[in-house]
Amino acid sequence: MIKLIIFDFYKTLYNPKTNSLYRGTYSILKILSSKYSLVLISSSNYRRKLLISRLDIKKYFKKVIVVNQKTESVYRKLKPQMIQTLIIGDRTEEEILFGKNLGCKTLQVNPDIENPIETIKKKLLK
Image 1 (cartoon, rainbow, N blue to C red):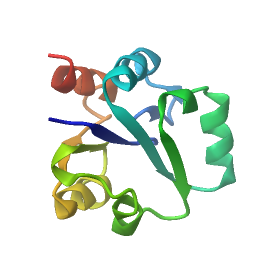
Image 2 (cartoon, rainbow, N blue to C red; image 1 turned 90 degrees about the vertical axis):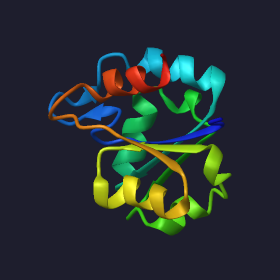
Image 3 (cartoon, rainbow, N blue to C red; image 1 turned 120 degrees about the vertical axis):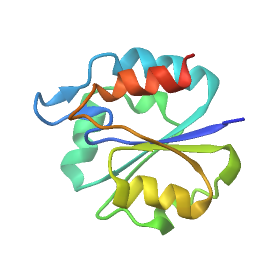
C-alpha cells in the first residue's frame, strides 16, 4: 500500500513549453494529498522555488525540496518506507533509477506522448 508519493516538478507537473502546470495538476494534487503524503523534489535554483510558490501548489505537499542537483541521497534523506513509496518522474536516469535503487515503486511519465497528469490518473485513480 502506497503511503508516500514523491513527485518531480519539471515535465511531470510543470510544462516548460507553456510555462504553466499541466492541465489537471491542481485537481490531481488535491485528490492525492487527501489520500497520501506528498513530497515535491526539484532541481534548479532560487527561481524554481519562486515559481513553485507562485503556482500555489506548496499547500499540497508535506515537503518541497529544491536542490542544485538531484542525487539518490536527496531521496534517501526522506527516509521513506521504500515499499510504501511511489516516485513519479519523467527521467529514467534520475527519478526512476533512484527509486528503483532504493526499492521504491516508480511511475515514469512521458510528456512527449501524453499529458503526465493523465498517466498519473490512469495509474492511481482506477
